[in-house]
Length: 217
Image (tube, one colour):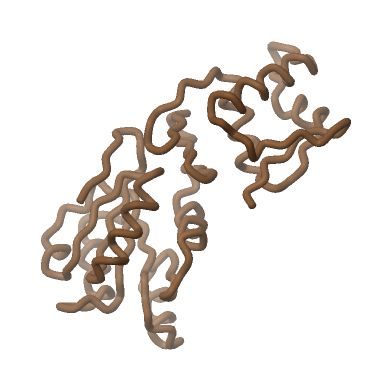
């Protein structure tokens, strides 16, 4: 199954449990282009060159995810996060020594997995159903492009990078200003209001007489 948007980062899932595949597709598909394979045999002959990240189950029914890692690395230096039900230290150390970027032990929460993916893909920022491709300055909500002004985009990026932190208005103005243009307090208020409305961003709270905070909880 593939969930597609040309601006999304591409993630390949190799996992033999159908329920896990379905859950990952539904969750990750909001912010990434997702493809899934359910066996070692399928994955071993699959072209991974177009993908930005692979999630690989170490214990596939017909082969080892560690062996698959070596096959993938022959074609592209793709970041790998291993999914494993095996929390033995020797297995984890072997995976990391081979060069894996990270691992996560089953059962895991989708929140934890998303955090690990964001760490491996630093050019991709996300908040709930919103994702930002920082290189291309593209904003997606539920996988659909959102038209933001330059100033709205800049503020959104600042808030997502500083989730759960109170940002004072003076600090926001400092981060937001350029050498070419002065930004006043009223412009900041109007732009934040528009950003809230466009993205239905109820989590962006005003702290009276102080500033703003984007609450993830």
